[in-house]
Length: 361
Image 1 (cartoon, rainbow, N blue to C red):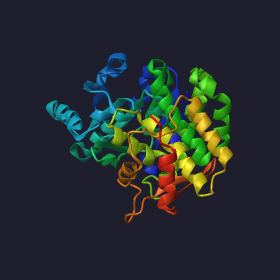
Image 2: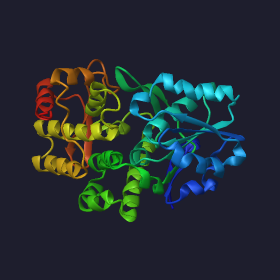
Image 3: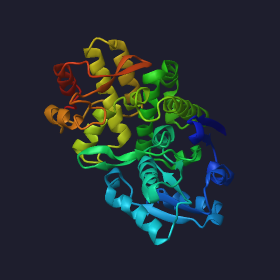
Image 4: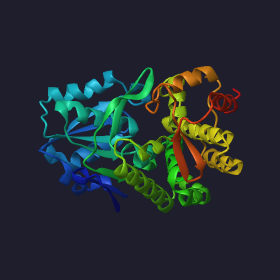
């Protein structure tokens, strides 16, 4: 097991990474407040791992809450199921919520924890690659709105993050690949050596080689922790973590939540950001090809769906948290390992990218 620390002063917390950690209740116990816990999972993950975790923490009278699976269920209506269960069982402010699942479960559990009785503690136990390297770390919580992804939420940091890499053994291939998009992102925005390592070791990761996969997860978590420690509430550097996300969120909303996995949409968004960066004269063509090649090798899309017209795509992108004073701001690349947030681009360049990076069917 390896442990990182996300340094936020009095709200700092550990990130434990290793095999068989679901069996190590001693990693969770120091971060459980009070004598009651609520385990929140979904219909896919709960049958596999819920009983194991509930048994390990049986002394805390665990309440089990199972949500439907799928991004289309990341809504305020489904969130209310958590509140209803907590209130029905008379859970108080000393109840610790534990998120057991992917990014959707973690985001919703964290948001419920931020809101219930104006704030209760929670713990992240992510079971997908995407959640392990990104969504579980940093305290972003929330739900989707039909007009925009993750537009209703709060910053609420977990007490700790426990990443059991064994849970990836039950993850479907498409969801595993979707997580790789977020891994690639760290190399692109701040860690060019890691990007080069990914190019050389991607086949091992896809084969779920334990050593290669553990290194990729650790390196991703370390990058995320450093960024969040420096900029918790996205006033500056943390916005770079959204590389590809403004394009990707437009794809998710335009197609309907759950049609593409989040990581698939982000991968296409990264390729589109790289294309626009090249059009602005910032990113070399050979680097664009390296980026697209790595994403393609990871079995990820590098083009937006044909069903979203460029004009519609632009309209969907305008509903973005980085938009300021009516100006769309994007995370773009100056080089592999160097990114920036900017509104310094012509709309025609963006439209050229939207047209060029659209699938033909």
